[in-house]
Structure formats: C-alpha cells, structure tokens
Image 1 (cartoon, rainbow, N blue to C red):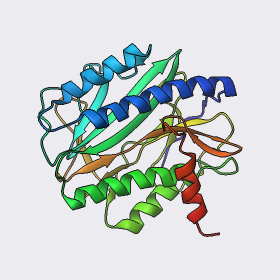
Image 2: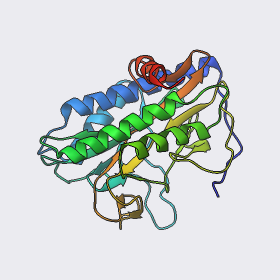
Image 3: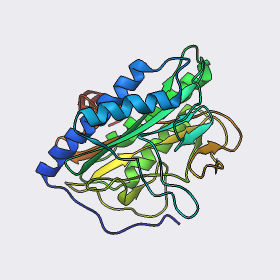
Length: 277
C-alpha cells in the first residue's frame, strides 16, 4: 500500500514567486551543464561548475550535507551524477565521462530559504538509438504527468499519466522505490508523488501546492539496488536508466513549471491541446 504523509505546506503567491527564483537558478545551472558536458570530463568537474554557478548567484546547493542515514555519510556534493545504469543519487567523483554515456544530473538550490529541484539526463557524444529513445520517453512522461495536474484533480492523475505514456511507448521499467515529493521551505516534504498508478486515493491538488515530479525509467527491469557507497542506486540488470525532474505548481491558468526557463506553458499547452476531448 502507498503510504501518505499528511502535513502539507501550501504556499502563498509571494512564496511561490520566491520559489521561482530558486527554480530559475536550478534550470539555468542545468542548462549550463548541458552545454558544458563532453567526453573526458569527470563527474566532479560537473559538480564544480554547478556549485560555482549556484553560489555566484547567491544560492546555496541543496544537496550538500543531506543526511545519509545509519552508517552512511552525509551527501558530499552539489549534484547527483548518475551514469548509464545508475538511476539516481550518484556521488560526483573521478569517474570519466565517455562517448556514448548518458548522464543524469540532479540539481537543487536554495534562495532566500526556498528550494528548487530538477534533473535532466544528457546524452554524451554518439549515443545508441535505444538509449536516446529511453531519454525521450522519460522526459515526455514527466511533461505528461505535469500536464495532467489540475486544481480539480488529485496527485494520482500525475502518476497515472506517466505510467500510461511510458507503457504506450514500449516495455520499459518504471522505478517504484523512489518517488517525487512536495517541496518548499525544505527539499523533501509531504506529499509523496508516485511516478506510477496506485490504488490509494491520494491528496487533492490545491492552490499553493508545489511538487517535484521525477520519473525514473529503466530500459529493462524496474528494480534497483543501492551500491556500497550507500547512496548510488543502479538497475539490477545493468541496463541504462533515465531520470528527469521539474518543480511545478498548479494555478488557475494551468501548471507553472518553476524550474523550466520558459515556465513550461508552451509544452504543457501542446500536450493538453493534443489530448482526446
């Protein structure tokens, strides 16, 4: 059974405007990394670029010092960098990025006490067609999930839309061990946002609710395992994974993607316009 957490932080319009500032910094940082990544760099090189960009804009990296739990050290870096079969939470280090890799980059920043959180998976060099298609399906599923969110709906609508789209595109594994989350004055808050359909009736979507939605899609088995560092999550079968994430809220005019540089209006509008009546 999917468990619900009950304490939800609803934001005022002024607080959401502050979250937009943090979201833009995250989005700009990810675009900088997208344009900077190339074979021969290390994941630590990417982390240094991100930290410099966030701090130079007056932000604070969200991930540094996140508690690791019993026997696991706190997270030491600005980014999570997960390569190929690594799903999420990879620790930046000396790993060299090579031609044909796909690199998931998860970034969070705090500005004036408010958080933004987003992730992209970047193909590097000459990437196999099936891996490029994996990335396309995962990113599109994220947008389909956000586009399904309305002020008359429930959080279930997001996971339903993600799963429906992914299953329509092929035999992919949707990771269930890790889900999206509420976000605001803290990075991870209630409610949880599953990236798949659940039987439970989840919370209603209301004005002031801000969510981070983050589907993780595997080319093979949906199951994952945690590596010896206590953080890095990989696929059980060694096949590639993709991860995309945005922070968004729902207004009377529709979803507003706080970590998308253009707010996401055009892409979400296109998805809604193409949906069956």
